[in-house]
Every structure is written in C-alpha cells, then in structure tokens.
Image 1 (cartoon, rainbow, N blue to C red):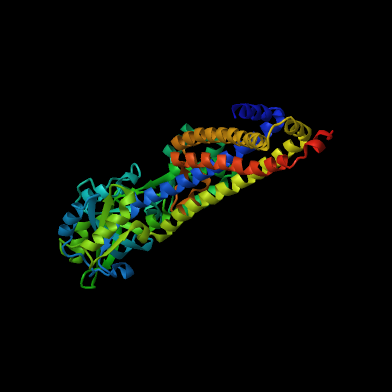
Image 2: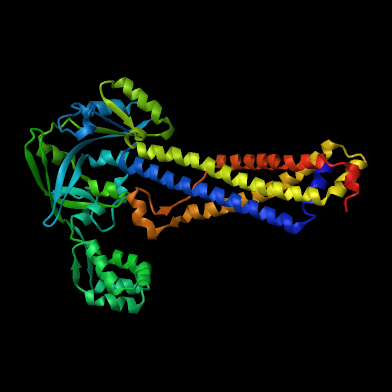
Length: 477
C-alpha cells in the first residue's frame, strides 16, 4: 500500500506545470470560500454583539401588550422585587429596569418623535455598554452632577435636531494641515472660515461646490470630522403624556452624545435619568415598564427564557431573537449561506479535478495497460488514481487554508474598513469596520470536505482507468 501511495505522489509531479495550476486553482477557491465565510461571520457576530450589548440585551420582561403602543399605564408595579428574584436565577449576571415613553424632542429649529427611556445609569452599565459609545469631548454618561435635567442623545438625532453643527475656523484649518491635507484643498475651503453650518447636509453641499469629486472622496471624511462641533450642555425640550394622559414635559440639557453603528437606533432612542422621568410623569418610584437581563452564556438564552416564563406566567418574556426577529433571521440565513457557498466552490473544484485526472488517464493509457498486463490488479490501479486526486486536492486545500488563516488573523486584528459605504452599513445596523472571524471547528469541517471532494472527484477517472483493455492499451501510441 505504501508503494502505491509513493508512486501516486511521484505521479502528481510528473507534469509539474499542470499539477501546480490545479493546486493553485484549489488554493484560490478554498481561500475565497473561507475568507468570504470569515467576513460574513465577523459581520454578523459584530451585529449581534452590538444588539445585545448596546440595544436590546439578552432578555426583556414587560406587561403583555406593552409593546403594541407603549401604554404608560402597563407597569411592573414591584420592579425592584422582580429584579432581585431575576438576579438569583442561575446564568443571569445583571438586571436593569427602564421606563419607556413616546415623546417629542424639540429644539428651536427642529422636532422629532423619539422613544424616551428612563434609566438608572449604574444598573444600566451592568447590562448594556452604551456608555462606552460616548463620543469623546461631547460630555459624559450622567456622571457629572447637574442642577438641570440631563439627556443622553444619539449622534444622528443630534444632527437631525441641529444640536450638532459644522464650522470651519482657524483651528480646523490647522488640524487639517497637520493631518497632511494638501494646501490647495485647504485654500478652497478657507473662504468658509468662521461660517457655521446648521446641518451636515448644508455643510456637505458647500464642500461639494468647491471640491472636486476626487478631493471630496479622499479628504471629505477628515474635513467633516474636524468641522464637527456642538455647544456644551445644549438644550432641548421633551414633550410627552404623564400617567393621567395630561401633556407634560421639560427642558433638558445634553449630558453626552453616543455613536453606535445603527442609524435607526440613534435617531429614535433618547435616554434620561429615571428619577427625572418619574417626577414628570407621576409614576411610582418602585415601578418600571421593562426589565432588561444580561446572561453569562448566550447559548443558554432559550433555557433561561423558559425558566423565567414559568416563574412569571402573567408577564411577557422575550429573548433577543423574539425582540429582533430580523436579526435572528439574518443570523440563520448567514449560516445557510456558509454551507451553500462552500458547496458551490467545492463542486466547481471537483469538476476541475475530474477533468485533470481524465486527462492523466488518457495520457497514460499505454502505461496503465502495461501495469495491468504485468499483474497490477484493478484495486491497486484504482487506489493509485484515487490517491493522486486526493493528493492534488489536499495540497491545494491545505495551502488555501494556511493562506486563509494568516489573512484572517491579520484582518481580524486590524479589521477591514469600508468607510466609503459607512452610511449604507449603519442604515442597516452594521459596522463599516469589519473584523472577520472564524472558528477552528469550521477549519476542521473544511478539511473533511476537501478530503471527501478529492475522493468523490477521483471515482470516475479511476473507473475509467479500470475499463481499459490491457491489449488495446499496449497498442496505443
């Protein structure tokens, strides 16, 4: 058997150019498939992590029907007691309660409907990591004591309400120069010095009028970033209904501005202190609308959800897949795409291997006939041809996986930035800076599939070799 394998290995390299072309095609195919899967996996993993750690948490509990229209009267009356019981459930790491009210946020120039969320910051930080998305220099996450009521607002909402503005001044021009922006570009925007733009749209329109398309594409992001500004402790008015359905509200100052990779979330979610919201609405101090739960192991989400449902059958208990069914659907679809993508690539490679091995059999018809004539049985001929196919496939597959592993390792540490498409990515809730990721299990699975592909691809050429008539084969020129 060892002699057959050694002979097969030597036969692979009898025509080095052809073998290297086949190996190169397999390498490129495997690399493309594995890297594409890593990119898709990394994208979805980042989206799920962002949703669980910044937006919805693992599990939410509320009164039945509350999510239909966010009725202010559908309260968890003894929320503190419920929270203590939930914290004692095995697998639950933290619990935080919230008030959720529909409101109108207004500034002197703009208004927009929002979800006003009352939080207890210390508890909230144990469940979600929204505090870590604070834009540097925009304030803080309710950490500074103030005699004013404070609000934590998303960057897109701040732009919508003209709280964030854009201004070109001498310090901006100096910063752009330090960043290496060409002087000819800076000279084009210098006429706008000391001009304050009320919105991002107005700013971009003005820049587009003076910069070329290439200059806008190359330097537009840096110019926009440097011109970004807002006045510390800017004010906005929040209007909503209290528990008696009487219109109320108040003046709030911006505590800080957060930036997540979800434009829809940024535009609609506005956070205030729970104590301020309870004071304005008249809601009892021990009441809340929603309990958020963070669990230790995400794989236990379904089990813990069922346990809580049994503990509180009168309440609505939803996990993140039920709260965001679109996210759960995309996660499931990506897993299916992985399989389909690899099957298509392996199938295409198998046709190439079959074609190559058929050529090998036809070229070596006389040789195979001679081996059969001197006593090599059909089993050994079959094994030799099959071994050559498997060797070709394995060499290409192993090289492809090594290159994939190195590439994934490098890109996973630095990420791949699709900055030019950032707006589109964030509109769908995805980050434009993607960190590909893949599991070791996937590499093992690919290895097994490569071996299976090599074996299946060798069957037809090997059978073709077995059908050769030794006498006819020896007469072949």
